[in-house]
Image 1 (cartoon, each protein chain N blue to C red):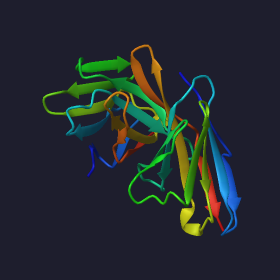
Image 2 (tube, rainbow over the protein chains, first blue to last red):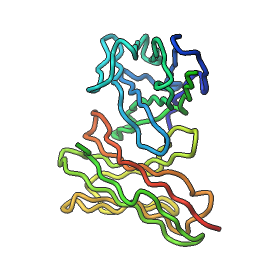
Image 3 (cartoon, each protein chain N blue to C red):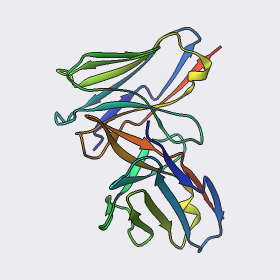
Length: 117
Length: 111
C-alpha cells in the first residue's frame, strides 16, 4: 500500500514557541491531506483538510491562526503549531487518500507526539 | 453528531477466542467502510475494508460482516492472539470525501 511519512515523530518545545510538522506521501501524489489530533484513548479528531494549491479547510472550533497548514506540493503538507501552549500537547496524525484502481483508501502517517512544556 | 457509532469501548478476549466489534452509521451515501488497527504511539493502519455491494469480506483471521439494510457492519477477529491487542477504529466515507471514524475499541487478548 501507499506510504505516508511524518517528521518529526516526537518533539518537545517550550511554551510560546512554534513547531512545524511535515507530512509526506512517499510513493503517490496527494492533492488532499488530512490532519488529525488524537487525545489519549480517544478517537481521531479531524482538524483540517489540506488542499494543494489552495487554502486549507478547517473544522469548526479549530483556530486557523494557531494551526497553520501549508500544502506546498503534491507530496508535502505541513502543520505549524504557533505560540504553542501545554494544552496543545497531543498526538498529531496526518493522512492522505489514494486511488488504487477503483479503490479509494486513506493512508495514515505514523504520527507526531508534541509535548509543550 | 457522531456519524459512526462504535461499540464496545473496550473488549477483553481469551487467546483463541473471537473478538467482535460493531459499528453503525446513518448516512446512506457512505460507500466504503474500512477498519483500522492502531498500536500505542503509532498511526492507524488499514486492516480490512468493505463496500456495500458485498455482505462479507474475509482476509485471514479478520472478517467484516456488512448489513446494508440495518446500516451496520462489524469486525470479527477469529483465533484472537495477544499480538492483536490494539485499538480498532471503524470508519465510513462516501468515496472521495472525508472519512468519519468511530470512537475506537480497545482490545486486550489475554494469553
